[in-house]
Length: 185
Image (cartoon, rainbow, N blue to C red):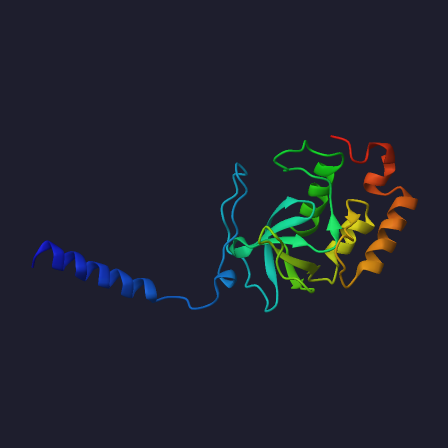
């Protein structure tokens, strides 16, 4: 058999083998990734219940990455910048990122959408809820790690405004040192 025929036969065989296997959706068969330099091996994760996604990592206080690499911007929340290309890290930005990370990273979340599904950066716009019902977007604002982002109308705007007012008056999170808000970290 010529080299070309052998190569063609091998490619057909590889295509057939690649087509066989687990037909469950990709997010249901993912394995946990070890954190860099953690020394922990990857371990299989339990199947993800229908309607939920796993939060793989937190980019900053108001943006996360879900299984499959989907970037999600939290609706109604604006946290201080950490990774802006032309701005320094803002006051309380690292704390806001750490709070969101502690709340969602590695956990299962359910997405809820509003009027617009994507922003100008092609990120998914969504509300996130944990398995226990915790409303992640509102919790970030309520605990003082972000502002109610009211530039565009959204379903829970009144609740977010009230949560920000309570955080301000209670001196929660970034509101503990009001004179530092908007300054570099």
